[in-house]
Amino acid sequence: QSTVYRAGTLGRRPAVPCDFAELERLAKRASSAEAWAYVAGGAGEGRTMRRNREAFDRWAIVPRMAAGAVDRDLSVELLGARLPSPLLLAPVGAGALMGRDSDLAIAAGAAATGTPYILSNQGCNPMEECAAAMGGTPRWFQLYWSKDERLVDSLIARAERIGAGALVVTLDTTVLGWRPQDLNLGSLPFAKGLGIAQYTSDPVFQEIVAERAGQPRERPRITLGAIRTLLAMSRNHPGRFWANLRSPIPRASVETFLDIYSNPGLSWEHLATLKRRTALPVVLKGILDPDDARRALEIGVDAIVVSNHGGRQVDNAIAALDALVRVREAVGPEPVLLFDSGVRTGADVFTAVALGADAVLLGRPHLYGFALAGAHGVAEVIRNVLAELDLTMALSGARTIAEITRERLRETGR
Ligand code: FNR
Image (tube, rainbow, N blue to C red; front, side, top):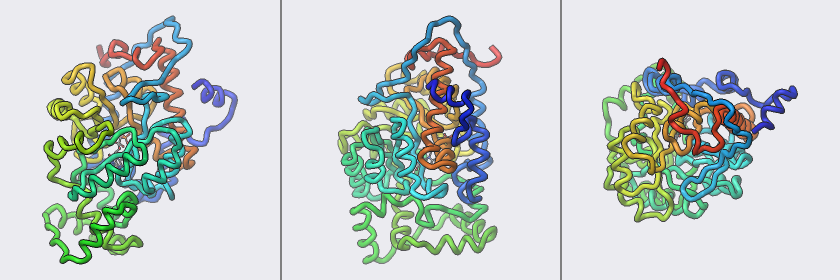
């Protein structure tokens, strides 16, 4: 990674800022208020999002001297594949809020660095096109469990056909969290038909839409939460509220999507069917409790992503890094644990790996890189994080990722 560093010291200005604060500031400037609320926003009062960062501050790296870490090897073996580093790009839905063809660009930026991209079920380009943009770089597919089991099978079959390296099932978003920033602006990307490309490109989904068109519509269940949401939207931004109801995507597709994209009744019985349904490695994303982690391992999943969805789902939830420590202690050294929520820098990757993560997912930072400079911006964000990880390893005496162990950290204040 010394190339990044050398380019910087030789006076070449990067396409995106090398520090997260400036990256975030410029990405905000480049975004509409609606895009920024959705992408940067968190659940409720934003406490989980803040806590994700504060948790990193409670751990300090203790550099070791004269350890001869001249050549570093950042590569890892993960679910049967050799990866150039322990970094993957997290699945992000509705990225097109930040620019056109977001998933094609992110896929290309990831591929330029050999970094796997986890294609979101709520993506803005069909997974087949994203896979084509990635060449031989690993792509995984992230699934939201539909109420319609036929759609679950169809999406899994498509993931298999694009050569996905794993199927990631996200558990923490069976309903969308309380997102006041979006509500205040009256902007709901999915209601506008943004982020439904995996659905509209799916033959089974099209059949379901057609079937429903021939049937009387299910009466939607009206909950108190839904009424409050609608009232808040119509009161604060009546213009946008009505605009949301008009959409360039056929209304029937959007409605079917909203009805079936997620199954709030998702249970361990559903998840136990996964290993029978696919030969792909199965990863469960969004686990925070040690008992849930044990349960996941009991049904034979191949890996877990410890994550609180970047603080977007439950306000005042446990910091993902604190959950990582607890889950690793509970499951022991063997099970494959991935981690996300709050990773911003190479030092953060180092810290998460030291606390037991086999690999780490980067969420908002790669979207900010995309917002500023498309595929190139994504690749630069990745290179910057990896350059800092590499330097941190050099300065801490770790030659390999396996050498980044818990002994290299102290809780601050001790
Ligand atoms: C997400 N995330 C997400 N996760 C998922 O499994 N499927 C999805 O479609 C999305 N969509 C999504 C959109 C946007 C705009 C964001 C910011 C996040 C969560 C994502 O995969 C990851 O867990 C977090 O982003 C990690 O936290 P940081 O790195 O953003 O703090």
